[in-house]
Amino acid sequence: MFNTNTIGRFQQLETPFYYYDMGVLRQTLEACRAASARYGFHVHYAMKANFNPKVLDMIQEFGFGADCVSGNEVKAALEHGFAKEKVVFAGVGKSDKEINAALDADIFCFNVESVQELQIINDLAKAKNKTAKVAIRINPNVDAHTHHFITTGLDENKFGINTWQLHEVADALRACASLEFLGIHFHIGSQITDMEVYKSLCIRINEMQDWFEDHGFKVKVLNTGGGLGVDYHNPDTNTISDFESYFKVFNDFLTVKPGQEVHFELGRALVAQSASLISRVLYVKNGQKKNFLVLDAGMTELIRPMLYQAYHEIENLSRNENQESRIKNQDFLNYDVVGPICESTDCFRKDVELPQSFRGDLIAIRTTGAYGEVMASGYNLRDRVQSVYSVSGE
Ligand SMILES: *Cc1c(COP(=O)(O)O)cnc(C)c1O
Image (cartoon, rainbow, N blue to C red; front, side, top):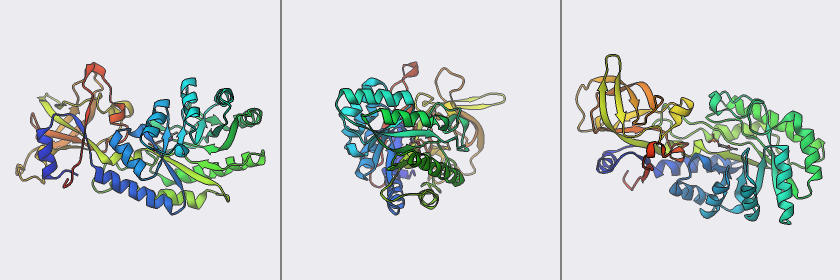
C-alpha cells in the first residue's frame, strides 16, 4: 500500500492523519458491484462506517444506496447525491425531529425497530398527510459468531423486534393507515466471516416472510442487513472481501419470489481496507518488563482496539524491510504501542513485534477505513484528525 513516493510524502506531513488509498476503495466497490449485479441485488452503503466526503462521493458515483442511522446521516446522504429512493433509515432511537426530516425528504424506507416506533411514525406521517414506507427490523436470534460487543441479532440485544411480538406488529400495521408495509429487515452483527451464519440467516428470513404472507402482508423487500467482515491480519494479500461467496449464499438459500427485491447494507467490507492511520513515534520508553512506543495518535483518532478489543496490523514505515534505507539485520523488539491520552486503555496493541523503533518513525495502523475516522473524538481537547488522499503514482 505504501511505496517510496507515498512514504516520502508522509515525511513532509504533520501526523496523525488517515491516509485513504482511493485505488483500493475503487477496486473494492467494483468487486462488490459486479458480484451483486449478477443476481440483481440492491446494495446500500452503511454510512456510519465512514462518512468522509471523498469516500461518500465515490460510493455514490458507483450507484449504491445509503443506509443511515441518524437524521444527519440522511441529510448527508442526500447532500452527497444519493438518490432519495435509495435511502433507508434504521436505528433503535429515531427522534421525532429525525423522523419528520426523513418524511420531508421522501426517503425510500424506515427500518422500524419497535411497535411504539411504528405508531409514532404513523402519527407523524399522518400530520403531514403522507404515507411512510416501512420495513420491520426483526431480531432473528441468529448468532453471528463474531465478537460479543458487535453482535446485534440475539434476543438479548436492544435492536429489532423479537419474533414473539410479531402479532402486535401485524395489529399495529393494520391499524396504521399512514404506513405502507414494504418488507422485512435484519442485521445480525458485524465482522462476520463465516458464511454458514448467513445461511442460517437466510433460513430465518424465509420463515419470517412466510409468516407475513400468511398473515396477509405482501413482502416486497427482503433486507438482509450487512456485517460482511474483512481480513484485519492480511490487508495486503487479502484486501478485498469475498463478495462472490457472500452474495452467492443469499442467491442459493434465500427464497426470492417474483417481484421481490433483495437489499443489503454493507459498511465495513466496502471501506475498511482503504485507509490506514498514520502516526509518528513521540517517545520510546524502555521499561524493565515492557517497551512502549508512545505515538502521537491515540483513542481519540482510533478507538476500535479500546472499545471492542479490535485487532489492527501495525507497521513501522520508516524501517520497512522493503525500503532502500533499511537497516541490515535490524533488531526486532516487542512493544506495547500506546497513545498519548490519559487513560490506561489507550493502547493499540500489546507485544507488537517491530524493528527497533525510534522517535520520529512513521507508524501505520492498517485497515482503519471503517469505524475509524467517524469515531474520532475531541477528548483531552485534541485536534480533529486530518485526512490525506492518495495521488496518482501511489
Ligand atoms: C452498522 C449497520 C450496518 C453495517 O454493518 P457493517 O458490519 O459495517 O457491514 C448495516 N445495517 C445496519 C442497520 C447497521 O446498523
